[in-house]
Amino acid sequence: MSEQYVETVIIGAGPVGLFQIFELGLLGIRAHIIDSLSLPGGQCTELYPEKPIYDIPALPVCGAQELIDRLLEQVKPFNATFHLGQEVTGLRVLDNGKFHVATSTGTRLTAGAVVIAAGVGSFQPRRLSIPGAEEIEGKYIHYRVKSAGDFFDQDLMICGGGDSALDWTVALCDKARSLTLVHRRAEFRAAPATVARMRELVAAGKMQLLEGNAVGIHKDREKLTGIDVQSADGQTRRVPVDHVFAFFGLHPKLGPIAEWGLELEKRALKVDTEKFQTSVPGIFAIGDINTYPGKKKLILSGFHEAALAAFAIQHHLFPEKRQFLQYTTTSPIMQKRLGVAGADSA
Image 1 (cartoon, rainbow, N blue to C red):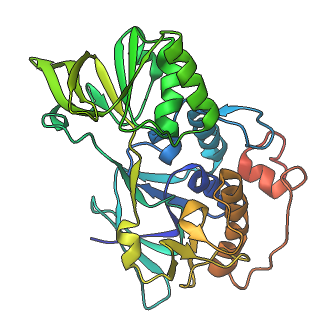
Image 2 (cartoon, rainbow, N blue to C red):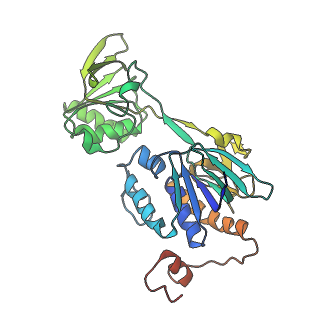
Image 3 (cartoon, rainbow, N blue to C red):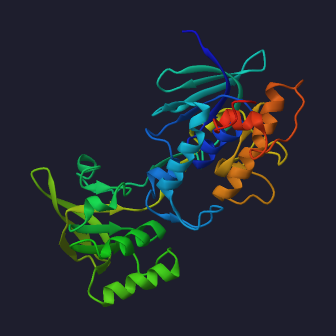
């Protein structure tokens, strides 16, 4: 199979990976982007699409999925090629200094540069370990909320004690016909203000809190009808439910990234803060997957890293080309790349 040459491959289609398309596009560099998920968005889409984000510049509040939608709109002029639903299984340096990139579905690319924007790596939710649970996952047992409106006026159970569990408990309480929160102990790991709000809802009789573990499933044919919850003293209580949400956190795994010969520090890729280049020239890392002195795991930081990495990638691909900073407000070249009206004369 012949391999297609591409200037840059971006691994990870979360917000930082998407913004990398934009920053490269401004410099006239085309990108292919690969993600193991079936849709762009990374954790924003997969884990908390309706959760508000308050620290994106110039957007006082922005839903996580809204942020992804805005980023996708922003990168449209650059016609990036998306390879979704496939994991990068191989990355190696070729004799000519370029990179061979292989995916789980047979995609083969030769890249001039590679950007790893894979967040925490590949991740899988910690599952509800009850016999029969796997058979109804996605129908009645869920590890993320895709659309809250699908669960209004139904009997819901939420399992877990972290931020996701408590955030969705508060968000869905007034919308559900009934809501039960199940946590194995009395203490919670979520934000104190959210825990306090949950306890107010319990005190007001708007939901119930059970200390224990979900241990059994009841079904009518294929439909979920109830969950058995066992308390610390061994007593079991059946709770009628239509849907269960299990928020036990994730198993973050570097996966194949750990085998690519890149220097690691505490399961993150070491980079410099000038280029955001890894220990292998031509391979860059941005976002939560990287580490450097003073690193802060913020989307905002990842955007900054993508901007500087883009200039470093341009120099790596075209070392003879003189670099100079241009501004989108005044540069006819950049405005033309963006498809801005009135830039045709450039």
